[in-house]
Image (cartoon, rainbow, N blue to C red; front, side):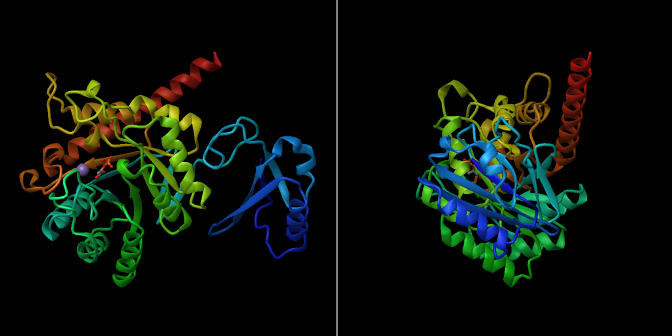
Length: 373
Ligand code: PEP
Ligand code: MN
């Protein structure tokens, strides 16, 4: 059960204390207070955990400060869409960029930062095409211990400075350890906070629960969590819920394909049919990653790259974010060169995405028209 409090409810107020006093006396019930401090309004939700079946909505509704009571009908308490009276937001803003189930952001960029020159060329191209988001991997979990592991903290200062220079507002960057979050925070501070970072949890760490708890505890950076490549969707959504249950609900779920030979010849089995499923089950914006799903630059007989086709499929189905590998010189890329798009393909890719988005919006309007008839 979730108690949604009146806006700007203050923990030090008499009413708030009266409320928590009453909750303290409920037998077999624990509760967790979540406060989201916004520019204009502070929202407070209280999650009741335990034997809530005995409580009635009517009984909780009349408690001081309580504006609304939502009975949790689904597993994903914080991020889920609950059946009755759940009109909690499905969007958030970070560094001036909106992420929601109704918006679309493209994060084109380097799988791994391999030189200041490639980061510069990438961000320069993005600025020329009006883009304010990118991906830049600094910490790379690799299958082989002998493969390039990313430049880590060493590359952060120039990546952040270049982002400032080219007006990049959000960089998706994978972290695999708590220390990476500290290094990112320190490098942002040292460079004067020229940009923002969306922390990425890679598919190999989707169920690294201790990492999820740590990343979920901080509310400074939003989080992009990849679907686990060999677990059920329910398990991945529960992983996202770990982040939110610790306090960070600025979470985007990224579909990136599943590891199965059935996906051959693609690197992974493309799972973008699940875009509407995740939007239905949760309030998270949904990202698609065509690069790590398809993993190759094969061209269909119609002349269109599989990467473009798959990205279009996700966007036409309502994806809210696209994470996609580009590289100025893929042959020289230290990670995932074979799946990288060329900078000369950026304009084409963005136009194709815009076309797919327009199709999605027209499809939803078509649905509204037909349902009204
Ligand atoms: C990546 O996006 O760079 C990456 C390693 O993806 P995944 O965790 O999906 O393999
Ligand atoms: Mn990669």
